[in-house]
Length: 110
Length: 127
Image (cartoon, rainbow over all chains, first blue to last red; front, side, top):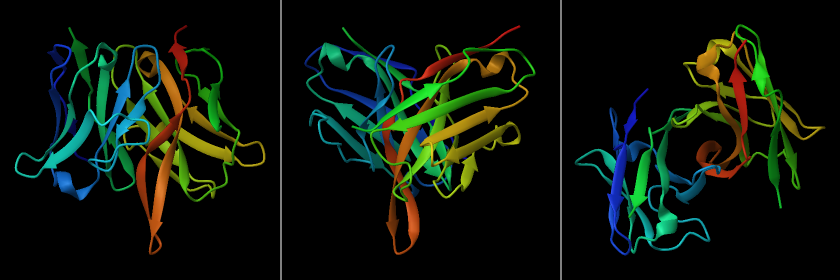
C-alpha cells in the first residue's frame, strides 16, 4: 500500500487563496483518482472534489483540484477564502480495492 | 432523501466484540452502483477506512484490520453491519457508515467517491 501525506495545518486570511497538497508515497498519483473531503467540527465529511478535479453539485467553484505528476501529488485550492471554509480536509485515493485516506489538513481562516 | 444511521453500543469492554449496524432509509441498498462502507475516526485524529460490502455480499477489508473485521449485509432489512473483535483502547473512535459510488465500464467496477455519510457514532473501549 502507498501513503498519502498532507501538511498538518495551513492558515490564510479571508479572501485569499490557499493550496493543500497531498503527496503519494509510491506509484503514480495519476494511477488512481484523488478525492477531497471537507470535515467541519462535529460533522461528517462531505465531498468537495472527486476524480482529481470534479466538483459535486452544490460545491462552489472556489474549490478546485489538480494533480501534478512531477511532484506525484494532488492539490486542493480554495480561492476567495471564507471563514466557513475553516475545517479539516482529507485527500483520498484507492489502492486496488482498498481506500486510502491522507492524514488530514486543518485549515484555519484568520 | 436517502439517509444512513449508525446504531449500536457506545461502550465496549476490552477484548470483546464491537458491533454496529447502519440502516439505510429513503432508498435501496440493493444496487450495483454502490458499495456500503465503514470508516472510523479516533478522537482528534484522521479518517481510517475499515471495509466495504456490496449488496451481493462481496467484501473488502483494510489489510491492517482484516483479521478482526467482518462486514455483512441484510438487504431485507436494508442494513449492513460491522463486527470488530478483540477490541482495545486503540479502537475507540467515531464510526461512520458511508456509501461509495461506483461506476461500471465494460464490466469493470471502479470506485468513485463517498457521496453519503451517516452522522457517526462514538464507540469507547473501556472497562
